[in-house]
Length: 301
Image (cartoon, rainbow, N blue to C red; front, side):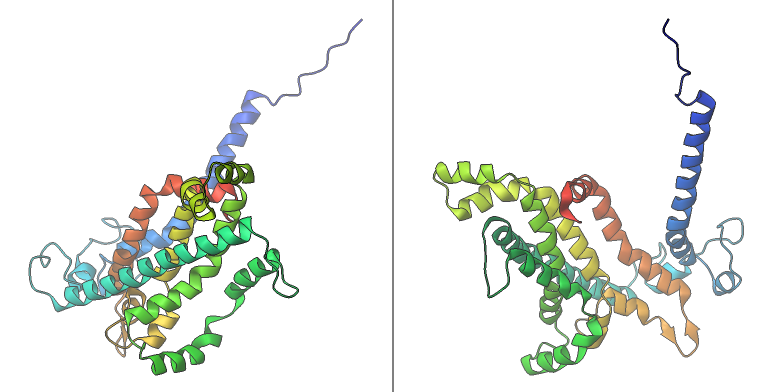
């Protein structure tokens, strides 16, 4: 006579408790992760007393004010008036866009070409092979930026690249090129080589395979590499502060300059930070589908 075994599936109550616990942990983690963003946004609407007293909740602990945005000439009552602070912010914003976008695009072009070669061809430079060359690119990320400070300072002085957006763009390209090569090589490795062989049989050259086969299929990885490079370049402070003085200063340098002998202008710094981060947030929301697809396709290991 066959015997019946007890049902090992979790009971509905246990399953509900498990799901509830998971959601509670996710909510707690979301609050912890998003609290700095909330603090920055609300600080831009606080007065000095609200900042020093640690007031957190608007309309509960304090009445929001446009003081931070007014200091930038971006408040509703000053947006239509001439403002030196707003002109300064827009100038630094343009510098940031020029250097970050330019460096990210240039790194994406060079990195895609290098990654395609490392993925589809075999190289031998002395004892080094493709994996060694790829690791060499990635190892550049380990090097502390301060080690390169003096060499770049001397080199840029000789080349007249100090305080220029071109100089920052070239430097930022070199900075993010390793991560771009690594991401794009993983993306190309995920594409079957049989597609290349079929295209070559049909008469395409290696360049034709790259532009007509590889790049369209690697679009999610390209978007991921571009966004990561853009974020790294957009937020870079060390070289922007070291190699610029007036004409090429970027937003991170402007944010850090909100300190004086009298103290820190928290409201101005918070408003600047919010305005600086907002474009990246909007871009990330619109490109989220491509970013997730590229990262989950093995673009980053």
